[in-house]
Amino acid sequence: MDSTRGIIDSYYESLSNHDLTWQELWAKDGIFTDSSGTLYAAGSDAILASFTPFLKGVKDVTITQRIIDGNWACYIVNYVYINKSGESMEQKVAETWQTANGRLQELTIYFDITAYRKFMFG
Image (cartoon, rainbow, N blue to C red; front, side, top):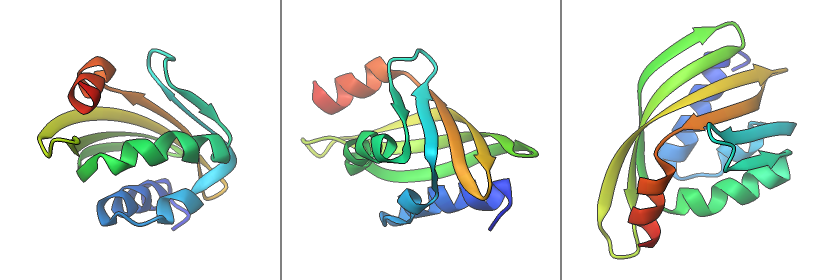
């Protein structure tokens, strides 16, 4: 699983399975951000703290496209969210990745954070 595709696909598989394997894939000095810089987490502990609440609202995740070049990748992912009222919403998201030393090193997510927050939190 040292390939970029293997590492990233394992991450999404873990999300789909609603297990915690994704947590073990991050580098200790990994970085997560969104395209606007609104979201930012440096270090695996901060990333886990940032992702855990988000993932509670993820009902399903499906990879629709991937482009991989060495240790860089871009994935187009379809997320299905479920809010407190039990309603669901789909959102296509672009995510760019960098891997290093068999770990997830960097993730930048491109999505409509306003629509997500409005749906999830009203």
